[in-house]
Image 1 (tube, rainbow, N blue to C red):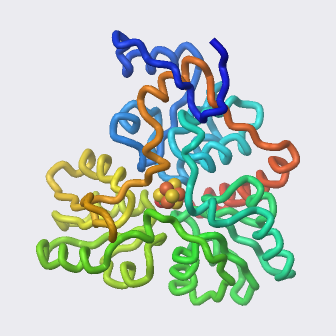
Image 2 (cartoon, rainbow, N blue to C red):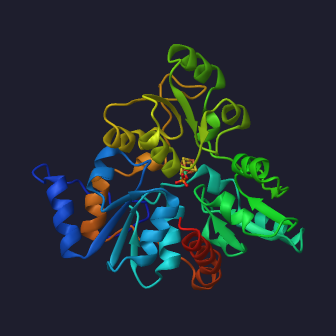
Length: 328
Ligand code: 13P
Ligand code: SF4
């Protein structure tokens, strides 16, 4: 059988008698592979992963793993970030079609022109970007550390923030900075319906609305708590409240329920859907079958151009250094 990754994943039927959990576990041990999963993966993938985390945690784990193979159950830019940090390792993503609408909203050449048009600006890029965008960036941030990293630069520093306009606006509003924003957005987080959330608030008057900063300003304004995926999770563990309306990708509710089984989590609904929750169609492309095949055939693999990798590692390392100093 020919091994190729042209369709984005190993399209090989998994024999019916394969116990996926056991087989994945065995393969990861045999191959000294580590499975890293984002909170937006399906519950079964989160449950089998060695580590589950947000974008910052995934980069931190990738940077320090001693495994020979990193299987990144998330989207393409997360695999790229791991590969940039560990160019000597094999980095696999179960389905390479797992892209990101936010990363797509920032084509590298256009972003490079924007940077060129604003000389003297420090370029801050959200991790949800391609390697080529990171290569023209001064410091990468995630939603967990964006505020602190922006504030680590002296007030008055001219800055560009890309690509998420909602996160950029939010950081500007809480820090009093005036960063120039790239006009990008995530199709999942922009989809939440203010009207439907307000009507859920009436239905659950005791519930807290907790929101990811990639959401639009009106949703942020009516929220009780705003934070990254990891911050939302921590908040639900610490809070004395018993009900939460969760305005982010609904995958994280899996871990919220595991951590606080006595609490109730209500996914915030999107605008134009008959579905009650909001899922990232890219994240959900990864499945247990694709994860199994990916470990078995060691495909599909992430590659990053050598010159791009050499540039892109600098702002990622800078992010990891500042985060370590800040204890994040
Ligand atoms: P965090 O993992 O930083 O919360 O980002 C959310 C996201 O959209 C990941 O793609
Ligand atoms: Fe990208 Fe949004 Fe999906 Fe995150 S949830 S991977 S930002 S499209």
